[in-house]
Image (tube, rainbow over all chains, first blue to last red; front, top):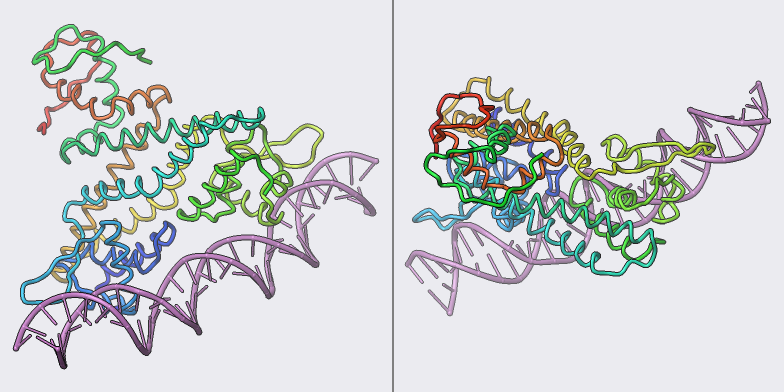
Amino acid sequence: MNLPPLTQSFVLHFGEMGSRWGISRTVGQIYALLFLAENPLNADDITEKLGFSRSNVSMGLKELTSWRLVKLQHKPGDRREYFSTPEDIWEIVRILAEERRKREIDPTLSMLRQALVETPATPGERHAQDRMAEMHGLIELITRWSEDIQKLETETLIQLLEVGSKVQKVFEMKDRLKVVAGGKLRRRPRTEGQ
Amino acid sequence: MNLPPLTQSFVLHFGEMGSRWGISRTVGQIYALLFLAENPLNADDITEKLGFSRSNVSMGLKELTSWRLVKLQHKPGDRREYFSTPEDIWEIVRILAEERRKREIDPTLSMLRQALVETPATPGERHAQDRMAEMHGLIELITRWSEDIQKLETETLIQLLEVGSKVQKVFEMKDRLKVVAGGKLRRRPRTEGQ
DNA sequence: GTGAACTTTCAGGAATTCCTGAAAATTAGA
DNA sequence: TCTAATTTTCAGGAATTCCTGAAAGTTCAC
């Protein structure tokens, strides 16, 4: 491995993290390297810097591409393929959320839905089905929320996260408002506040 | 494997999911089984239902316990140990978030902080450090937010998720308010809205 | 259409992780 | 303290995943 020290510790760390998660250590390292790189890198650059085989790098890039975590580009007058990660780190979060939903959440939801339409044969199965219904509701709620807020502008999203649970106070207040300047808020049926 | 059909497909699914994530297939299955069970189960119950070795079950339960995902209890007049998952599914989400923070996020943040206090030797390292700073900021923001909202009552949390990005509208409105009934909102310096 | 530059595929060896059975350890009651 | 019930440990075989080198495939310039 042929890297400056700061880069190296980051790359090694994400290699380990990657393997705790679904991806292999080398794929994690490739991604980490690209994330830090000032300019797009080609497969040989990566091979040379990380010190594993060319074919492994090729497979790794293929996997990262399938996750849409790296994008491919070309330099004029150079036949080689160059890879980079999105500049905007929030874009990375969005992509990760989408891909994970597609690969893990959606299949889980459809398994649960399938189970929920079956007729339970015993009280035990009935209870199991109730638990699955709870889980289905929870996952749907979280995914809907996540899809919903992903549509916000990055700046708006950051603001929203920054206020965190305090936003709840504003929200509670909503129903107590008598006068609203601007009036952009659409009237909605009053929900039972906690 | 000796399970009613509904339970079985759930258990198998979570076995597979588990192995995509950091835990082994059998640990995933044990958890899934406990999640659906009407009553706490002992290790022999689990061995019999899932059909793998007693020692594997023991190790699996140990791992799940270390994640605080199952809890141990005793039945009067029975020496064996019984295991169950929390009734409240939101409690499970809270525990998972905490444990993952402890095991993955915190070490990552401290690696990043370490890197951020070093003096970069080259422009490349300088850029790498900037990227790490971005990542550090993002992770901190998300974890803070997550810790913050985890403190809410379950009911309140659900409400908040249900309104999703629409809460932003109320939030934007805040700065335009002239009259507030109740006046619970503390004045804060006006931030640049999106 | 040929050849050089570059990329991908894939069989199989290396490394890792998983799982088991046997044995050791723990626990509670007598 | 002894014994039987129960749980835990752990060495090593089984299964899986990872990684490599060699070969095949692709692409572009000429």
